[in-house]
Length: 448
Ligand code: MV4
Figure 1 (cartoon, helix red, strand yellow):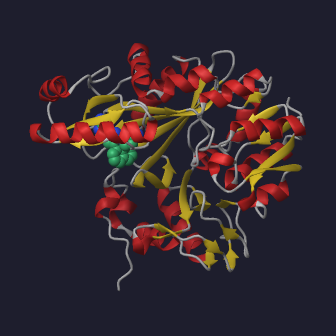
Figure 2 (cartoon, rainbow, N blue to C red):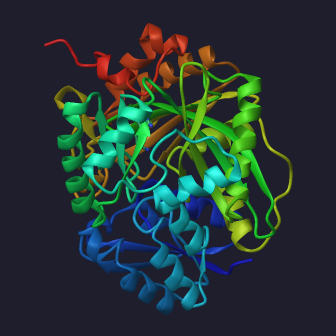
Figure 3 (cartoon, rainbow, N blue to C red):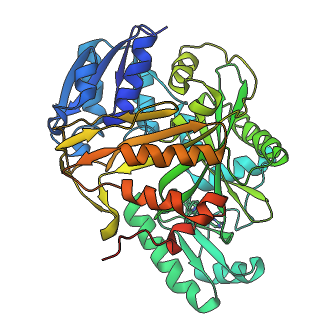
């Protein structure tokens, strides 16, 4: 087992990783930018190293500065958390060169899933269902137009280097094709320095249902059931839950098997997520694989009573996976509390938290790095807490969530708490009657 883990991240996930390390008797090193001097991850780690100014490019995204912190603290492993360098194959490679264990998949596995066309080809070869489409890269407008007619409108153009919605364009008819093609290419070039574009049939009003998987260094893969992440706005998830209200025992079996096949296809080492689109007929299609721990991992931890960070560390240390696929026996839901103003287009609301009281009580978990008096810096993402509730049924879980949202006090900044309070009361949400376009028509603003 590792002696000392350096956590190449900040905020709640850095704290989350430190907690498990302490329980496992592993020493921890925090790294921080000058904007994060007063962060709890700095306080709770055994050691902390300042790695640079506020800009991520000169701190949390600097491979050089992080490796310097690894060297001076003599850490033997690095946990990347999510975001920043978590899916950066170069970073995983540099760690390997230094003889430091990167807690996650191999550089090859990260690269294979990072290129969406390669990922799709891998899935087709493994027998995992994918959305019908161009197969490879589109070379020019003419072939694109011809293919769109064959596939049938609507179609969607996606960047092969993309993911998470950037560089995507939906096309409904011939006339829209060329402008969509041009903007998709430009966006892809600007965001990823790679203007490779592919095409798929556009699935209307899909649900986003993802499966948690774990694979060890000996080729064994299990799934840990699903999370429904359909409640999103502009590709930012706001609520996740398990079980999915759309799930049946049959569908879980079929999707779970596909998720295991997907991870087995690349001999996946670590915990990861297979994202699927699910249409109204319960057809499901592989969308992407995330080769990291995700923000919403506590939903799974709560329904199967399992520490996913501990599993990551054990897998990285070469321990075999124990136990079978795991199924939910409870219901869990996570609301992301962001420092944003839901009345003004969710614009960021950084600043000093003057008063803070976390929800508590049976079945309530809050993962956060903030406290009364803490100042949220403007440089990083706006998530300040995750409120996770667990109960026997979805109905009880929503009632508990409403209670927990009501007692959450955060003053000094705007937060998404009022948005969640309205969502929990929505009739369609309560019925589980929603898809990824739900928030486009949901009225969550306060009356003037
Ligand atoms: C799609 C789709 C419909 N049809 N692909 C959005 C992010 C990226 N991971 C892929 N995305 C989508 N791909 C086909 N063929 C609809 C979306 C999509 C979406 C997916 C999941 C969650 C929210 C979404 C919001 C808009 C579009």
